[in-house]
Image 1 (cartoon, rainbow, N blue to C red):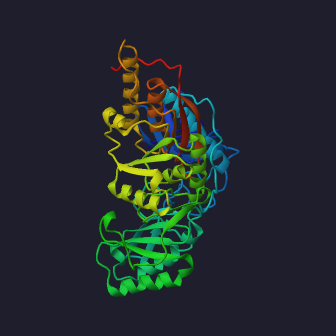
Image 2: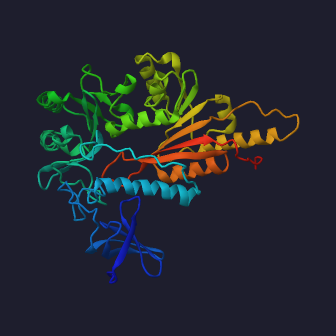
Image 3: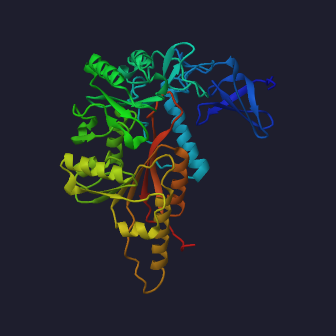
Amino acid sequence: MQEASEALEVESLDLEGQGVARRPDGKVVFIEGALPGERVHVKVLRRKNNWEQGTLEALLRESAQRVRPACPHFGLHAGACGGCKVQHLHPAAQVAVKQRVLEDDLWHLAKVRPARVLRPIEGPAWGYRWRARLSVRYVAKKGTVLVGFHERKSRYVADMGTCPVLSPAVSGLLVPLRELVGSLEQRDRIPQIEVAVGDAVLALVLRHLEPLSLADQARLRQFACAHASLGLQWWLQPKGPETVHPLDEGGPQLGYSLPEFDVYMPYRPTDFTQVNPHINRVLVSRALGLLDPRPGERVIDWFCGLGNFSLPLARRGAAVLGVEGSPTLVARARENAAANGLAARTTVEARDLYTLTAAELAATGDADRWLVDPPREGAFALVKALTELRREGARSASVPGDEAGGWQPPRRIVYVSCNPATLARDAGLLVHQAGYRCSAAGAVNMFPHTAHVESVAVFDLDPEAVLGPVD
């Protein structure tokens, strides 16, 4: 590609951590390695009619927020680790950028402005990642094993000896794991090691494409013994996630605690839990504070998972219905409720939350408050069903003699999001069609040094909203 000659002013960052600039003709240019406020030359790698993409070639004016990356494997060079995108931006500035992304998406995609901007939730910038999926590759030509994240925009595994965003215990295992895998008979048939760090256990899930020999199993046990101070446990995964099982039965249970609510959450290493336990504790506390449940109220926790929010809600005295799509997760959430002595106040049901209809939502019954914590796809079906019921209620109320009773909407919704775009889409429905106002919203820095934006938003029923009839 021909290189651009004119200097460009970088205006913002996109969701991939790339600087965004515009040419005089309005064409958007995405620039890896550039930061807002900088003046740069870019080496163009891709060119389309409406946009270009490239890498930073020359830095003519540097941002005051640019810092020296702490990790030696970070950068734009060949072989650089792709696990982080913005280590060159000061952590405080990263949070400000994510807050701006949230507000911009709410406004530009949904014409929604929160009445109050919440203070961002922040935590440790390093050593925060307690969950990870590490790729493994045996390089026969070099007689070595690589264990880590993929290289930037590549299928190859980065040559890593340390990782400052991983839990220090896990970072310290990267080189020993390379040596261990290199000693195994099946070293060329092991594609990944999944990591889950709990309060007292460090679980490693070894994905192996062929059965492990007794000698290889013995090597795994020796490795666990050598790192017994970490509470290291081996789990094996011969096929899909459903085949995961411990190498040896017994031993301490993997889990994490929420001390403020006297809750302990056991889980399997392949279950979904938050990557950042420090932020998760603050997020649960902030979400419950915003939701403000009262003893005796009924609260629905949509996409409840293992009970991360359901059990603290029940501990606060609410009657909680947790709804989850996976029967396996439903069973585990019920087990966790029982283990914490909260089964009497916690009901968990399986429901397909991506095809939920208005009739199915009405059959769920009324609730005073909702906690919604969906995956990246958002909660469109749920919000659409709520909108239909709200507008149907407005239609019934406008017909003389027609009862407007029946199903009642929640007075408050706290929406925890891991994708500002789908949050904005759902917020648009809630505010413009379902009769809610966005009372507050703020960013959650769950993944420092990445462009990943998590957030929490509050929606309150607006008594002055005017709802039209169902289309």
